[in-house]
Image (tube, rainbow, N blue to C red; front, side):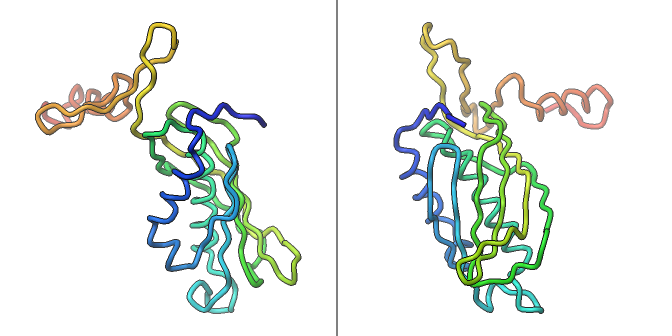
Length: 190
């Protein structure tokens, strides 16, 4: 799949963000590959990432799969944007037994605000990969500003601050939910 990449410096931005995550240092994760809509992460086996049967812990498999998908989505965002996981579903297919884990995240459906990704996690033993987990990840893009020139054809997205309060775009589901709750009397107006 070929993607439009709004930030030509996406790889540096992804690698900088990856380096800031403390979990990556804790589990000794490394970023192997960064390409438009695709990211690959690996984690070497150690007792610190194992479970009681000496396999990779499922939490580690989920964490690197989630990160690979999140960073795959980030490769397609504006330079001032960040990403957050909204939800993920993981299926563990086999015990994670091997010298290292490799997670490959890829964008399935890019979006301005919500991007859907798929990820596969492989255990590597003696140079052979075995699929041990697969996942579906939903990512939300936060921050960033779109070009608002008359020729851009894009809507403006921006977060602004008014008297210390963040204002959301008109379509924000949180704002809509608060309005519904107010009508039902569940939340007093601000």
